[in-house]
Amino acid sequence: MRQVDFFYEEDTVMSYPVIDPVATGARINTYRIDRGFSVASLREYFGLSTTNAIYKWLRGDSLPTLDNFLALSVLFNVSMNDLIVYH
Image (cartoon, rainbow, N blue to C red; front, side):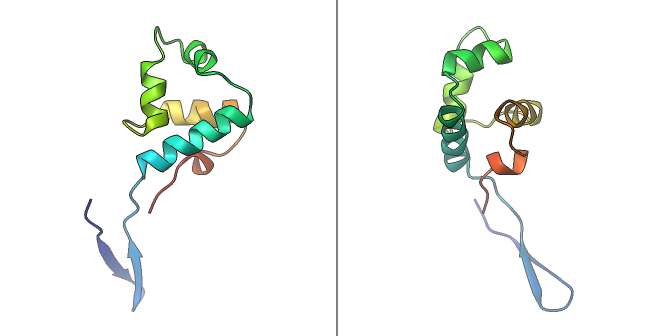
């Protein structure tokens, strides 16, 4: 992905944040394990018929929807920002 910088307040540079899906998936997995949840229990919590979507999140193949990020943050008792890794 392309890094885009823009300037504000004279010489201060702020880069556009980009989510790192692999690192975010690893962080979700760390919280999952630390909180004692199995992948199967997450499947039940989200009402999914299979664990495919959850494994895709954990591998970084895809990201949870905004609603699912919120649900994970509530389940793990952390902020949504704690779950997301960005550059």
